[in-house]
Length: 583
Ligand code: ATP
Ligand code: MG
Image 1 (tube, rainbow, N blue to C red):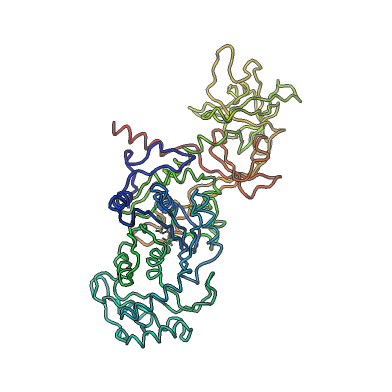
Image 2 (cartoon, rainbow, N blue to C red):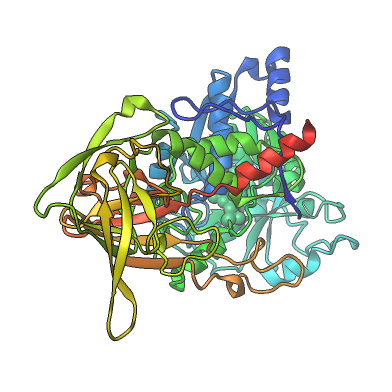
């Protein structure tokens, strides 16, 4: 898998952000649906579903599927259901169900009253299994799971028939009933479809339909001790709900003949299954098993850790639903698996936040700056623009006084070439305020570290321009020391150091590629006072630093901010280069 860059023409450059979901570029799934509408197949209906298994939190890959299923339904005036594929009792938890409901809503989609569970269909599935037994199409098998695997054959060798394959219908019915009644221990027997042990498609070699599992289910409790396999439940669940287009990821292509076989044997409504490529992202893992490992072993603080690619994590990080929907529209769908660059997701986020996030001034690593000729005790209110991209967002007042904090990085005692910010003897502009000139520094006697900068200001430069036309090479941000709000700021980096964590071929452990520096906590940051009561979840651009968002860990005494994303946009550069090459 090489990182692929969607062609500019086929991606929706400039797709609308904010408000309505962007319309995805045309693709093969839309073409199939359009053709079905034209021919009147399914009576012109379009009905899709998003079918998560509640065994983890939703991630950005699920968002692709959600946007696709809900988006297509909306585009064609159809419906989309939310259905929990909860056939596996030991793994599923209500916490996951609740998080999934919250996250799909947050992304901006509505299933109205169509929230379903595969477990709602357990009775119907059981009856259909009995129907197949009566038709001689299913049998109770006493082979152990290991034996079933051994009998299954390989891609190059046909399987062997189970010695129990030719039981009579009566015997099968009686045994299946006894399985249901709880007479046998876990794994003692299965119900299998009677298809073809020599089929080149392994999924058709008498697949297991039911297994015995004495386990409590989050919804059906102890009603059942046999549970349907995913392959037996999935297609029939779609059929029961009248789904027209059953959209799933490519690994289910080989299962389609089995789903077709079940539906045809039962003679029930037969949706069209369409497969598309799973989303893979560089520097990211999107397998629920791997994400669960990160949580369980404490490599992250939880499913909603801002470094996680889960929707809960992205939300906490400061992602907007609009940015994620726009990303999903831009990556499109295809019939081959590839990998999308994380930079594209971040680019979509910046594009959205640039328009919406108010600009503010914040100093992450404060260095004290004293203006010697500025009167003590005076406070001026400087007018600052909230967002130059959107004049309707207005202006605000920022207090200015004799003692300020500036960013430690914005001062060098011995400035290297190309460094234009503050240095001894040098003049710079304080954003929205005055020109100041550095007259000296005060150092810690013991360590030699600069602890304070002394400056003078030019009262004639109020607002940031000199009447005599003299220029400065840098504008730096600041906060007034007496007015500043102290905060904790959490800076995040990629969770993994390699584009494909664990690599592809060598079977290395993905945990070996964890980035040990994915979180840096800064205490003692100083923010302009307008951020004192910033609401949890609200997003800002800290001028010159990046986009930040208020974390739920915030308290009135100590606000906590997450860095959502830095300002530098590598993807914008890639796009520019691509465009230049095309011209
Ligand atoms: P995992 O392999 O991580 O357990 P899954 O596919 O089993 O993921 P489900 O809860 O079954 O997870 O997924 C619900 C839906 O989301 C499925 O239709 C699946 O195809 C889709 N989906 C899951 N992961 C991705 C992905 N990375 N890209 C696109 N769609 C995905
Ligand atoms: Mg699954």
